[in-house]
Image (tube, rainbow, N blue to C red; front, side, top):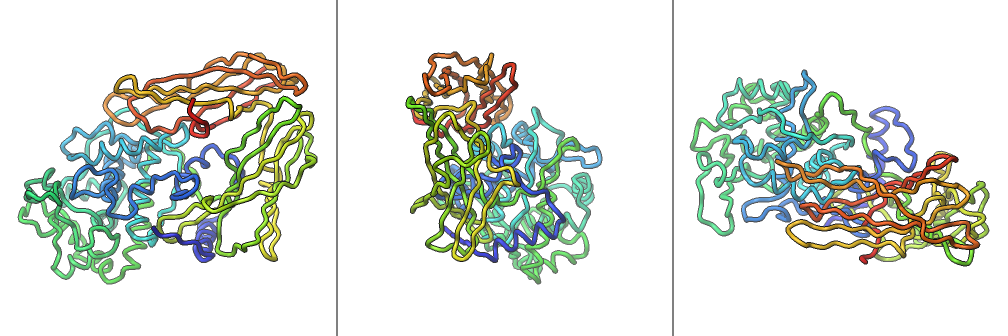
Length: 550
């Protein structure tokens, strides 16, 4: 595992922001960005999201169920095949997860697409679409296989299709004119077509079990898929595919295979007289730069009615796991964490102080609170030029009559003393509608082939708000016919008042919610919504995983 944290890497990120123009300052929370940012950057360690595990190292087979396969190539091709039927002039198709409905087509042979989509369901949620996860999978494949030399800027906001799209994935037996037209439909000219194919064929190979007309089937327990690699470094995202083609030493079956009809790479690489492929062969950096540009465009190809976010940068200071417990003695215990990016300048005596504010905006009596870290509360990247983080946890008790509303984060690091105010408004933490962590639990049962998921929830509600309705809203994962991907169907349940907590100003509400689904993995979350004559209050996107099993 590679763990890199350097001020140089962070500088690259900052310069990238400057180079692409002014970006609106981030304010926490952001419903479009926060979940995707965690998946994108929290690779390994404390609070890891783990999607990058599937392609780390590059030749990992966490998803592939037989030898001769690797996740990195299959995840990359899942993204390309999803995008390949796009018609950019018509504004349809692109990365939209329609590939899940299209795996029975001859143009999508093999197990890779269904198995990749199945793996990706573990990272779907109401705020992380399958389409976004497919794009992240390709991004991680390229990042891992290049050890961070190719960092594709990531934007979120893709929407999942509810059915199949048109046909049109380029096939090896098609002629150059057909390929040129297909890539033009996708938005790529001849030169870009050459580059995109070279970038896509620097990892993995052709599987004889799917394409026996191209690659012979072999009886080898170490290569059950009968894979013939595109180049001599199938698990490195480098320019070997170009160098070996130009040197006429390639093993690429789509360039010099025995079947002349399926030599599509040969035809494509020579479409401009061999100019671009020679330049890619001559310079590793030019190869990486070309791929970074083209693959970003590939992943950003979406239907015309989809508006992607700005590039998602690592958040410098990010709250996490904020909870308030109402106690019977008229106090409330406030706990949480802050995740702080590491830029290579951390001192061993760093102090992180939480300046907690009351409902009226004044400092609470116990403020500032020292937030602490320890071994095991670090997050590490799997490859270079990605950030690492450290989590700091805090807890304090305040009178319920004072309550809390927000906090600032002060960091004393060597001679540096900075305070983050989240754009001047503080990091919000509301104490109106608060799930009680210790008395909320989940169950996961398997009465059949489906999983039965249950949430038993207790919520403390402030009495002075005079709510008429307190509801639990669960984005329920729902299976769809024709794909292993899921959709999320918001389902509301009324919570009932069960107890008034005398002397605290709070009452407890309880309820439960259960659902069956043909998957164990999707990220289960819930929202709380309360309404009354004084308005509506919401507490959104709490993960089921934050609670103990019943």
